[in-house]
Amino acid sequence: MRGWRSLLPILVFTALYAAVSLSVTNSYYQLVMTLVPVWAIFGLSWNLLSGYTGLISFGHAAFFGVGAYTVVLCQIHFDLSPWVTIPIAAVLGGIAGLLIGFPTFRLQGHYFALAMLAYPLAILYVFEWLGLQEVTLPIKRDNPIAYMQFADHRLYTLLALAMMLGTILLTRAIERSRFGMALLAIKQNEAAAEAAGINTLAWKLRAVTLSGAIAGAVGGFYAVVLLVVTPQSVFGMLVSAQALTVAMFGGVGTVWGPVIGSVILIPLAETLNAEAGSRFPGIQGVIYGLAIICVILLAPEGLFWKVRDFLRKRSSPPAAAKPSAPEASVAAAAPAAPAPARPKRPTGTGDVVLEVRNLSRSFGGLKAVQDVSFKLRQNEILGIIGPNGAGKTTLFNLLNGFLRPGTGEILLDGREMSGRKPHELCEAGIGRTFQIMRPFLRMSISDNVVVGAYVRARTDAEARKLAADAIARVGLSEIADRIAGELTTKELRLMELARALAGQPRILLLDETLAGLGHDEANEVVAVIQRLARDGMTIAIIEHTMQAMVRLVDSFLVLDHGAVIVEGEPEAVTRDSRVIEAYLGKKWVAHAPH
Image 1 (tube, rainbow, N blue to C red):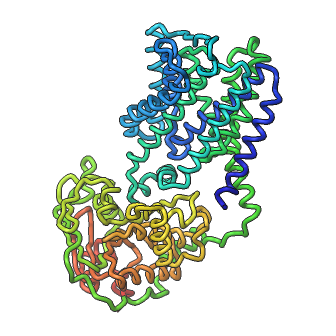
Image 2 (cartoon, rainbow, N blue to C red):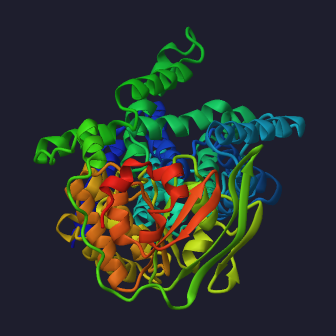
């Protein structure tokens, strides 16, 4: 019932638009009414890749143009109907997306955007070289409907609306599925998504393939509507710019964004072009350029998100105040409040779960990790400490695949895992939190944790159950529907911990989980970690809050300049002269817990 209710605005909008289009008799305005859903579909195809993954594409005209020329050339040379060739155009657009995406996804940021821009420009010159500067669809006097040539041009609008509605429903279905959750996670923090077990390259390839298919189909329909195709009209920079602009103006990462952008910008640009195009050539480009400038200045994520965030702020009660930075740092430095005592539990005397042998990694002349070796046993809590720059986080990045080791071995249950990708190591049983928190800010706590559960769950229902269990284990069940961007530092730390737990890891790597917390908050998080340890979780933790660490861990691994200087039980390690000199300092001896 809830799903049908959420569909109602879309169905009402489509019905109203259809009613208005049927009342239009002027042929030019009929064309404009058709172009609005056409560009909305193209914007939705762009949005499926760029809006949901955050990788900005300036090259969607490549897929659009492939679709347009497929329909035109197939009718000219093989007398095939657009009813047949538009699906073929979708297939070819999807193949083009896959072929373009596979090499290009190795690039990031503006490099990806510029590489995507090159594809349609290259294809444009190829088509001009082939002599296809202007190709016209032949008029079919006999049985025109079979060739999608309607005497009443309002039928094009209705057909475009049907395609737009289908694209919206497809996009909504993707949004609510594992597919959409993976894309949104990639957009908001690709490293965290990969660490949570998402194969980011595979999901991006799926996205660009489906995006290319939609763009190819609507490009083929566009050719039927205009009856003439030129390389510039389907591969030109303005074509890609229109897809990007309508989506960004209306709102990226939502089905309504491209629709809102098309409804506002397409009639405005087309009307001004008709009225003033002869006096001001290129006025359409000016309109799209101004639209982008306005969005960047006033609503960087588009009108939809601007309005939604405004309404949310008006309707939501004020969030609990977060501790200021000075208060947090003072609380972290003061040694007054005691951490929870180390719980009585079986210590790590079982089988070796993780063994590291002579692990090294250099950055140029800097040896960040040097010949590190240690063993982590079942149900053990290993504390990794050392001064800033000692190589602790670099070691974690080697253990869960964000960095490839220069030399050495990482054995998980006896299996060599060196050089594996983060999602593969997550699947193998290594969960991870980050020193600098990496939440998916526009998702709820529940959805954040569901992303982590997908690595183990076969179905969405199973993922939701695993996520609910993980959220309960860290004590966030009562606020599971809260948006991550509204949470306190402690809640974000616990949410990240729940996201790692949802994947049911064999080992948890906790990178400064207490950073930024006051004493009471830190003790609450430590209590959660202790409960996990009592439940049999194997943990390696990096932390600077030594008062808590000595009561939490079973053994310490002390790094300095990337090398292990001491390894052993807390009582022995914290009294070792090398550790005191390199890390703890002489004041620690006077205040150390006994």
